[in-house]
Figure 1: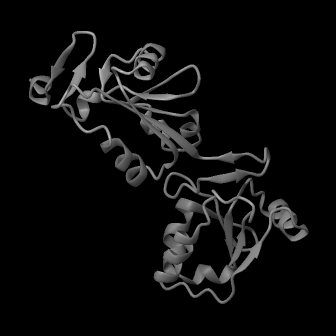
Figure 2 (figure 1 turned 60 degrees about the horizontal axis):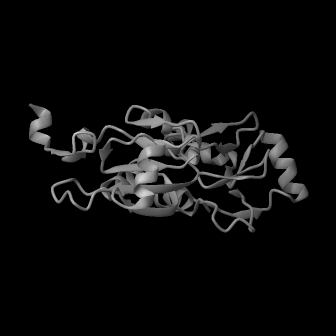
Length: 223
């Protein structure tokens, strides 16, 4: 197993979970070698396999003897002409945060803003969104902020993004790097600055309609 990763990138995904999953599934890793992308060996590997991000892993051709690799690797990687297996990520296993080797930029760290109304005791807990994003969509969150719609900052955000229903969340434009962002577009609006704003609050639970200044219960919405 060749582990291509930048030691200087402390926030990068180290792919330890993926490697541990392979071991737990019975894949016998005889040797694991860490390679810096900027080293001569790293540059050769990047060129040979047309790798565009780090970290990633490359498995030798013997990985092909395992049924797990035969059946599942196509969802997260490629099999090369020399029979090596290169991890490419994707919706099945997003590799974020990572370094884009073309631009040198860190990608996949998403900032989130929680917007609620403390006067609405019946409204659903806005923190529910965190678990859905982290567990369901494997989103890596960085900076997290919470504001009340009655605060100056909360009002500013509501005006900026024309938010008329709360609770709501706002995701920074880095969410667009995720393949899952296409699915999120069914529930979020994509703003001019690239931010994603949650709009389908009625699909989660009781909420506050700011325009009508009234609480809308789920039962009412369903009716």
